[in-house]
Image 1: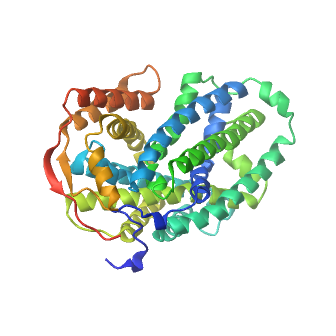
Image 2: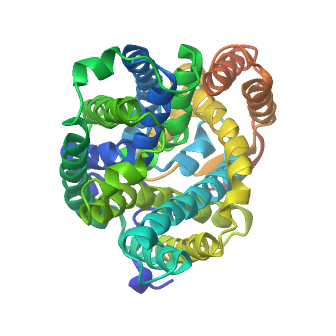
Image 3: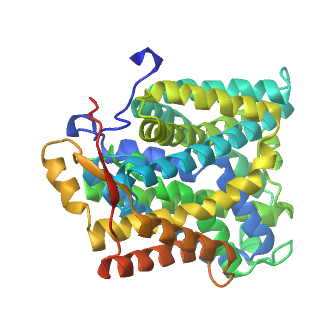
Length: 437
């Protein structure tokens, strides 16, 4: 496949030391993921139903959960230099199981890519006009696709521009609104809407970015050390949750509604256009990037065909943009929410296998010494599929506690128990295709 479609970005191979980036380059992108416009809406939702300090506690608990998940799977990513769906081959799922993960990631994130494009299109159509919503959906989606075609390096430069721009512009709009109010009084005021419990608030925070935490290896494979992963995760997630989330809480108290996007953008006139664009580009590029990696692994595994990451990205970006323009993505929201329940067990199983059970850890380490991949991978791991299903059902139907965390913990515990009982065994074996970086 010609590299004219973009760069392959080590989609099916380890990222070599020479291609890794400083922790700051990765941290800016991590912060960009967590400080998007959607984080404002999350903060406003919390503020509409909770007092300031209750919302602060919910954000804290949610951030800690996300950081723990992101650090553990992120450490696996930096050590092995592999994407989430590729790592899954040797962290409990086997080759065919990893294809299912790749497909789930691909479907889920292309859906969110389309939804984010549609959200931006609505704002641009209202503030700029010129094009209808469907036209802006296409334009926005295709611009992000062009950025992602050139991989991590292009996305890093985009983050250097959009993250500071978003913070400055949002800071301006927040100050414009809050300067009309007594901030101390807002912090002490009762929530303007129906009350949310601490559990409900924490669930919103943790659930809002749990998929982003689980696909952390797609990003941390470009880090240089475990310390870099910890620094960027703690800094990026903590600042993203607090700076943007708490601003949303205060705005909800100030205006008495959770629908603050229009207020934020209209309060600063045309600058609102830039807020929308900057706030969405820097999360949507990662939605598309990880979706492309998942699709490459799925096609390679199921059909035995080597698909260039750039081509996969172009196709997914086009599909997501067209779906956003067609306005049919709203119908996918329920499906995407349900699919989100399937992601937390993936992290629980991967962490349990890599750090505790270690059934295939030795194969990864031996191959890492030579810079390649293990020659073989199990085709299926039946115990893992059962655990994945059971944990997902627990997350979906057990109403005590946080659904996403219940699913993750249940998967971790069950996999460790299965490993100790000798039930974690591969069925069938497949050779790893040799792919040049």
